[in-house]
Image 1 (tube, one colour):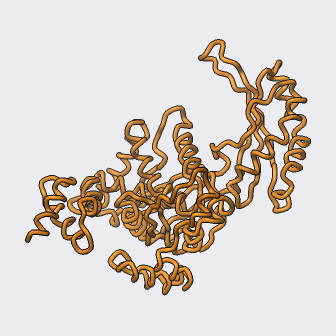
Image 2 (tube, rainbow, N blue to C red):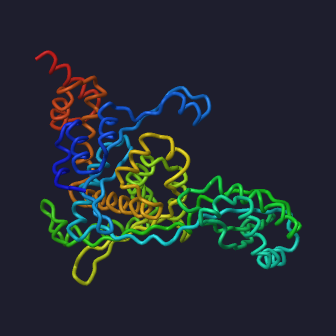
Length: 431
């Protein structure tokens, strides 16, 4: 990738941005023409086959974040999102992080969990041992239920058993939950796992004498963790009246607040997911599964806490890390049929599933740095509302050059709202 072609990307016109991506080697000429013709939407036939009662397509803006260096490689990050300032914030934070060498990621080989949950099991402890002793036979049956994933080098790898009880609720029934740990290769794996769980359920019923109540994957992806790290020289954090060391310390303190206060942690983590969800959506993955998994992971201690950690190292640098459970894939579902998802994978350089997980964690870490840095210095509204002004201008009816004119005047108005935007637009039309 020739990153010099992407310099001052945000200042370029729409056509210039697309041409810059082509000249930098990020997209092909065919993809350039697709973007120029605004032809990324689903056609009616595809949409009708994806969901029931299809009426049309609901579009999100697709943009790209810049300045990401992940594991030594320059990346342009596709993001599908309607919220102003998210892409700008990610690009800005990635630029700061690049002063310390960018992001480094740690993504162990992933596995996805499937569950068969049984009721009416007599002796729970005895049933647990019986299932564990039959581990290999259960794994073999699971793999026989979906031989194609085995041919691709994946399949059921391990088995664990949990007794589900709630002592705090007297009279509440207990259940036996059998977990299979499955390598789904590049697929997110929902259909693979559900097929396997349904395939092994009768045998587990026979072993335990219980009745299978649930046979389905778990979206709590604790065996699919991705971690991103960064080191930022303190001087790179300097802004306005704040020294880099002051900003560093304030970021650490703000994250400590999010670690002990769930009211702050929810908003803190929502900012992380602004970036993560945008890339998950752009790449055709299931952002509902990712959201559910991530927020459960944030509560793993028994209290909902910050997902990020910010600390000072011996050199006085700011160090950050973020670990996310990510039930994602690079094949199947919308990834294979949605033209925008296909383009997004091309922009990312067709990463494998582990690489994509590292990218998502890195985007989340950048998004968090941008948000917390803004919060503890100038405040979140300065940058956010500047971009929001353009949305208000469009809502008021501004078109073409009027959009920026109204937005600029809105920034100087006593109140930045739709009524002010309409008033400014009326004055422009009459003057």
